[in-house]
Length: 361
Image (cartoon, rainbow, N blue to C red):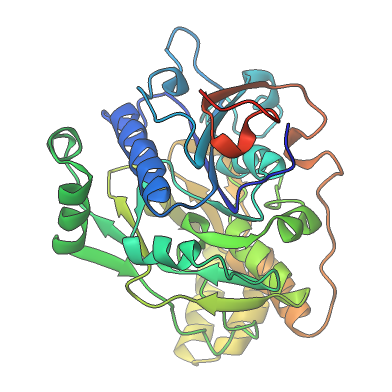
C-alpha cells in the first residue's frame, strides 16, 4: 500500500437486530450520504463500519449498502466482530450490542489523522464538513459540536435526494443537545459532554494514548464518552466547541439509549437524599452519592446489570483529574481487539489506498 492516509476517519457501529424497524435503511442512507458529502468536499476520508455480534440467520447490514463510488477520496471499510467477543461482557445474554467495545474496534483500526465516533444513522451539517475541509485541525485539540434530534420517516430516507434531505434536517423541529452549564457541586472541568459520543474528533494519536473508550466489563460502559473527554483534557488536550451551525443530526426513535436509563435507590438512600436536598447541601449530596455509590442505574432491557452512580463512576474520577491526578489507563494493550484477526472488507476503495502505481477501480 502507498504511504497516504486519510485526513479523517469516522467510526460507526451497529447490529442487524431490528433496533428500529427501518434500521438497515437508516444505516444505508446515512453511510451513502456521508460518503458523497465528504467526496464533494474533497476530503480524503475513511468511514469504518463495525458490525458487532451479528445475529445468526440475518444478513449483514454491510452486505446491503448498495453501490458506492469507487476510486474517489472516500473509503468505506467494514469490520465484522463475531459473537464470541460479545459473550464475556455482563448482560450479553440480554442485549446483543456493546457500543463502546464496538467503537473501540474501529477506533483502533482507523487510519485517519483525526478520528471521531459517529452514530450509524446520523448526519453531519455541511458547515461541519466545511471545517474538516480546511484541514487545519490541531493535534492538541478535541472538537465538539451539538447534536440535534429530529423526526425522520422511512419515506424521507427513501424519497428525498441528499440536498432535499439536508434541507429537511435543517427545517424540521429539533431538540438541540447543547453545552450544559456545569453543576457547581461537581468540581470537574467545564466541558461540552452532552451527547459527546456522537461527535468527538481527536487525533488518532490521542485515541491510541487513551486506548479508546473505557470499558467496565458490562455491555453498558456508562459515562465512557464523558470520561474519555475529561481524561483527554487532563492530558493537556484543549476543547474546541464549534459554532452552532456545525452540528450532527440524529433521527429520534423509541430506543434512544438515554431514554432507557432509570435511577435505583434503596429506602435509606432515598431518605438521605431527600434530607440533603431539603437542606440544599448540594456538595454534600455529591460527595455522599459518590462515597456510597448511589443511586445506581439500570437500563431497560438489561435487567441483570446494575451500573454505578454517575457520582461514583464519573464525577469522582473527573474531579481527581481536574485536581491534577494523571488518568490511569486500564485498557489493555490489545484494546479494540487489536490482536484479534477479524473479518475486514473494503466496501468502497479510495484512490489514496490504491497499490503504488495502480489506479483504483
